[in-house]
Amino acid sequence: MRIDLHTHSSISDGTDTPAELVLRAQQAGLDVVALTDHDTFAGLDEAVAEGQRLGLTVLRGMELSCSRHGNSVHLLAYGADPAAPALGAEMEKVRGGRMGRLAGVLQRLAELGVPVSEQQVLAEMGNSPSMGRPHIADAMVKAGHVRDRTEAFDRFLADGGPAHVQRYGIEIERGIDLVHEAGGVAVIAHPWGRGRESVLPPDLLRQLAAEHGLDGIEVDHHDHDLETRARLRQLAADLGLLATGSSDYHGTGKLDHDLGSNTTDPAVYHALVARLGVPARG
Ligand code: AMP
Ligand code: FE
Ligand code: FE
Ligand code: ZN
Image (cartoon, rainbow, N blue to C red):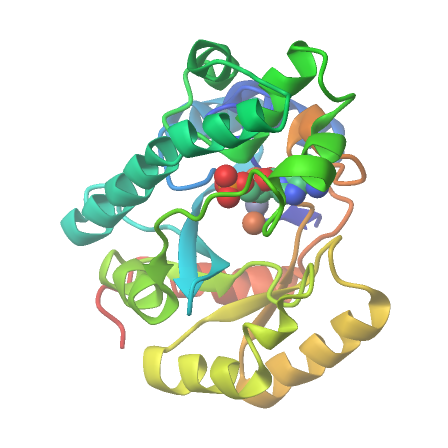
């Protein structure tokens, strides 16, 4: 059984439609795929319907933009009720913050001599309700300023880069609680990727597990080297956390994140599914 629990469609910053993504998941030999678009559930019905048509299990997911002392932390939510009011209100606030920072980013890009217009970015968003830096990067590619998303991030858009503007994120403790109130399972995405270890040290993960019932951490992820994976796997075992693995697929938007390039152990997946739909766990 091959299971990939972290993917993005064109409903956020991936490049496949939800249905295309599910078809590709089947072609990649996956039995289970979770769609986890950033801060939106909008692609899930289409993905689930395509999964039913193809005979592939689609797990409903979402990647919630959280923060810890101003640093961004991503929280994967599985099986959360899209109608849960408090979670929905926070997701809307995050999406508003995503749009709200656009003018500031565009002003910096213009000052840096690589101008793109708001219309160009909106065109790259298509029908995504969740604007992300990758859409700005795509507009920069189209305008001929950079070769690809990677160059746009490396030179301009990455955290701390010359055109980076902070946006709203939910405090991680509250994010976990909101996911649980919505009956979902909460797993921190790529906790130690891209120099994030200082943001989420072992003691904090221990506290999130003990006081907020954090369910799991993503261990096998492209942004973790082998040594990091080994330490995270040991920590998950020590803390009783589920240790997942996933591709973080973004279609053609990210290289080396092919569907199924990292996968979740079936026993972990079954333990995760067993926790779905239990409201207001603490
Ligand atoms: P945002 O959601 O606006 O904070 O932008 C973060 C998103 O940008 C992440 O979800 C990644 O998909 C993407 N991203 C971050 N770094 C890179 C990179 N170097 N190349 C391509 N995409 C990236
Ligand atoms: Fe993304
Ligand atoms: Fe992420
Ligand atoms: Zn992701």
